[in-house]
Length: 411
Image (cartoon, rainbow, N blue to C red; front, side, top):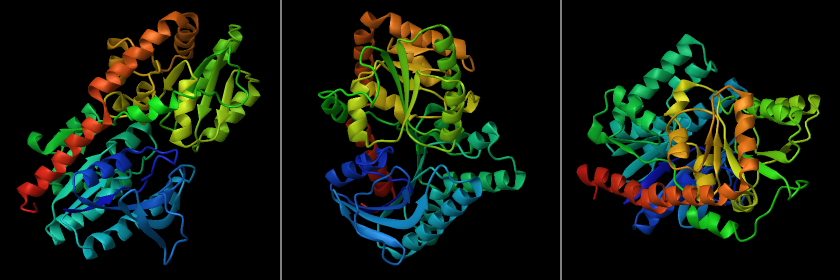
């Protein structure tokens, strides 16, 4: 069957962004389906297309995936209004594709929530099967974080959320709390499937062959690594505070590396500079193929988020799954299903939220128990292989789309 796949932030492994959509599209192609990916141009993403935009878009085929990339540059450093306009523009252009292309099924994945707009049009105006994947609960999360407070905007987002969920023939949630949130909007249990972010086990296995540390870091020190966005939701100020605590304690044997970009990065760097921290280091984002080597050279991975209760069971963080794919012990600073796995599987340490001393204690534990780290790493990899192997999750993903299409008489 022919599938239209909408993901504004699509990236191949050559980029520094998540590659779930790349893996799922490849799985659909391996199952005999034709996939056209509609995306934008986001900071950190790499579509694999190298030609210049023509009439506002790039087109081509990369690894069997037909790609339509709209020339809508986006960065998480952009202000709220600019990002909102970009999201709406992508939604409008996507509707144009959904209304004119020949296809059998439309699949759309957030973020942003506006990704569901073409699916709504496809469902009601073209009577096409529509599967909607939810990576974050909107507007619940931005409301809980205080990022969006305008009641009109929150109401509009709530309407779009409700219409998107109820228009989809099937919804996929990436975390238990997301699945519960979808069901709370009136979607029947049978029409919701949990498919969390997965583990690229083979990619990280290859990366472990050449372990590397970011430039300037001492090989003799314990290294905690964070790989991802430096935004409001990530709460990385807690890492700065923990670095201050460690330095005050005289723990000069521990380094922390933050790799990535985001709207809060400059402020974090200024804070670290003002505190004269010598144990906290900032690096630009790198392609995931290079990131695998950095993880192989680290002692633990940092899974950090702001202390927002909606995050506890309502996120499926790429970083965590990358860490355990690499067999890397994890230190997390908030409760929830990730912390439950870290403690339950003995693959790292979890600590009390909003407590820099507790985070510093966890990092000291990693540094002082080097003999336990190999077993923690093995436990992490076992969890990745048993529960989150992306190949197995992709099989479930393909089955959901095929079943939805079959139920609607497409195949």
